Length: 270
Image (cartoon, rainbow, N blue to C red; front, top):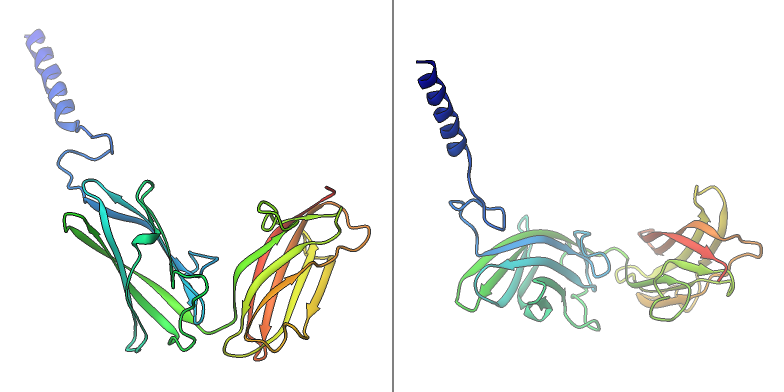
């Protein structure tokens, strides 16, 4: 009698284990779980240099980045439109983004306008926008996703560089050479609504207590412009030691609006 009870208990335990087990495919999905043929991940909307900022600027560029996964089929079209929210009249007409799509990696990296020498309209209405992104496959299947971003008319920067020199690996390496004694700083500065008043470069110790460089440009050829390319080489004072510092770049328009970039800066003897 005890043997029969032991066998019954073992059978019940095995049954419980069997019903509690579910198999998964190589993508860690259960067989009964529906899978989307088209999925969009890591959607980022923002400005050209900071794609995930959630903000773009009148007379600048809107950056759209995402990772698109397709199980069956090939991406044939990626189109975006956008409409200003809260009853605003601003909009982005339908634009094809397929040229910014890498079919090997599934990554979308697109700019609107696509040409670096074109900009969004100067009078693009400011405010919150809702974007609609539609991915269409070669078999006609499509998927739409949405995202939000802001349009601002405040000062902004594009193509920012800060580094030890002009070489491809130097212009933006956030390193300064004490051997040359200066730092390469370059940026396209836009103050399209109110003219540029001044640009300041501040370099301090890591704790922010000691100023190493505090230089201001408030005259021609920069001051008074609505868009300009800033290119200067701030000098390090004699006796500056190698190490870690803080770098801050500020552009200010005549109404007191500012835009800044802050980075860690490494000074080396080489």
